[in-house]
Image 1 (tube, rainbow, N blue to C red):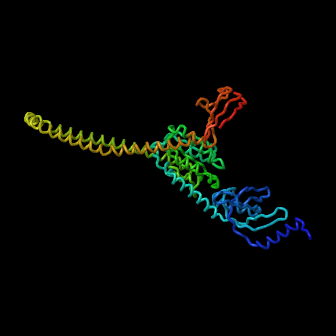
Image 2: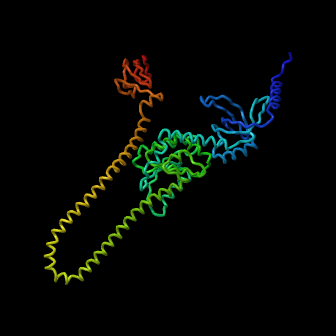
Image 3: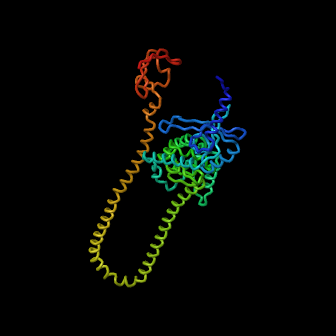
Length: 443
């Protein structure tokens, strides 16, 4: 029997594949391990996962030659606003190839951005639907924006131009209003955006009473970095935050999930500052309007009193001549007018009491609703930090006589310790206290 060399066999496979797959094919897959070299070629893997178990069911090595990659990558990112990186789903046109040395691979020659846009929109819809199902989608929008939002907690990159624009706009507002912004630095692009922004929110929450509102801003930059703001965890934190959140993350074409759950969404960091200035100015105008009405009312009353005094002065001689007669008649009228005045006063007080009686239930219900809402937010935060949840995540508590052990020097040899985990307790006997503790364990 004549044997083939490995090269001859691979060459045979190559020729058969070229005959079997001579055309170009559109393939749906997920990008993985995307990297490029100094020559400008892009090497990657195309994978497919089981929709139920998320297990890998197919994988193929792929590549994009540099002339194609130089055109395809910017085209894709401009159309989708999404970076060409691992983890996104794509629809690509490929040719099937086989190399005697490198084996089977797919050469990518084209890409359809609309497929990825559809997948990104679907993910946003799924996150919003989940937040709505959990009843938290509109919680932040339901908060009341303070009349004078001057104490502002700002989440942004410290070096971002957008943060500088925001502060300059507040400081140089045309009305001279004073604001007190404070920066809580966070990463605003890259893989660490979610964790970094949530950490900044936690720092603000620790002193929530010190702030009127939170502003999340990100100036300009590539829209491909905005996918980090389509995070369920970040959106859930923003939706349930107890202070109104204003987003101005520097894009106009697409809304992120964080934009959808925030109290107010504006286009740019500068627009966020303008919103706060307008809010304070509106309150100032209300105060000025009330003062002007009070001034006009006082002037009108003074003018009427002047006219009345002038009339009295002109009538004084006649009044003096008839003083005696009037006094006699006045005594007769006083008793009648007194009764009428008392009756009128009683009617007015009854009407005023009835009006207050009608308003009291509404005012009470409104206050109860606000307090219930605040208690719900606190309850959600408390549940998230409960010991049972910490135990469920793999943490444990070691107890000595019912108290937590935090220092090995607290225990002596022969002492029994109880270690509490998520699904039970473990009893241990200390053999050697302090450093290098050894125990005999009984479950």
